[in-house]
Length: 396
Image (cartoon, rainbow, N blue to C red; front, side):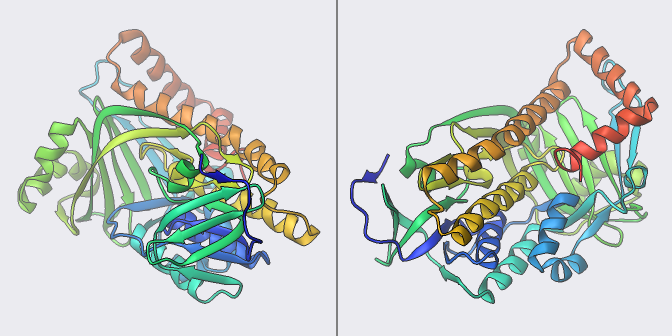
C-alpha cells in the first residue's frame, strides 16, 4: 500500500480516477451534490459495445439531469425472452418477461457505450465545482490526512478522498493495497451491431446455448446489438469471417426471430472473466465499477452495479461535506463498504452461477434448471419477484 505519514492539506474534497461511464457519473454526481471534485482521467478509448441501462440506472441519470440528452439515443427494452437452444440435452420452456407485468413501461434502455460516455463527458465539462484533468494518474499516494494524485505531465491534485473508477487494472486499488480475486471462463464474447428485416418489438432475446448466451438487444428501428458468447476459438473464427459470412452465421440463430440480418458496425471479441476486490473501501479510498467488481455480460448487471456504487458513495460523501466532516475518514468509507457489499456479492455470485449453469452438461443440473424455468413461466408471483430484483435490489 502506498501510504505516507504526512500529506499536505487537501485542496479538494474528492478526486475521481477513471473516465468510463461509472467514473464520469461519480464525478458528475459528486459535484452536483456540492462536493468539490477533480476528475483525473484521459478520454475513454473507442468502445463499440452497448449497455442495457436498467430502470434504476435510468432513474440515477434522470436525477443527474442528463437523461433528456441520452433518451433519444437509447432503445427501450419492454420485454425479455429466454430461449433454450434445441441442441441442449434437457431444455427448459421459453419464458417471456414483460415490464408491463410489474407496472413499468420498460425494464430499461439499451445505448451505445460511446453515446453514453459522450453525454456524460459533456455534462462533466459543463458542471461547476468539477474540474477535469485529462491525463492518467502516474502516481497515487495515500496518507492519513488525504490523497495526492500526480499525472505523467507532473500535475498534482490533493484531496480528502479518492474514488477509484479506473477499471479492472485499477491504479487506485493497487495504491491502496487492496487485493483482488480473479477467475476466468472458457468463453469469449463477439459483439457487433445488426440491421434486420423484422421489428424486434422492443424485446431483448437471449438464446441459451451450451457455450453461453446469444443475446439480441434492441437498438433503434430494426437495429439490434449482438453479444454472442462462445468458446474462444469459435469466437475468434467468427470474428475473422468477412461481413457476408458472419451475417450468415449470425442469421442461423437470429433470422427465425428478426428475419434477414446484415452487419451494421464493427465487431469486437473479448474474453470473459470475473473480478472481485477484497475490499470496496479503506480510509481515503472507495472503489466503484470495474475497479471493485467485473462480471460477464449476462443479465445487464455489470455497469448497472457500478452506477449504484457511484450513487452510494455520492450520498455518503455529500452528506459528510454538508455536515462539515471528513468525507474520506474511516467512518465514511466504512459506511460505503457496508452499504454496497451485499449487493455486489449477491450480483457477482448470481451472474457466475447463471453463466456456469449454461455450461454444464450434467443431467441433474440441466433438469433442475429446466424445472426452475418452468416454475418461472407458470408462477406469476415468482416471475414478478425476479423481474423486480433483476432491475435493482429490493425492486424500485
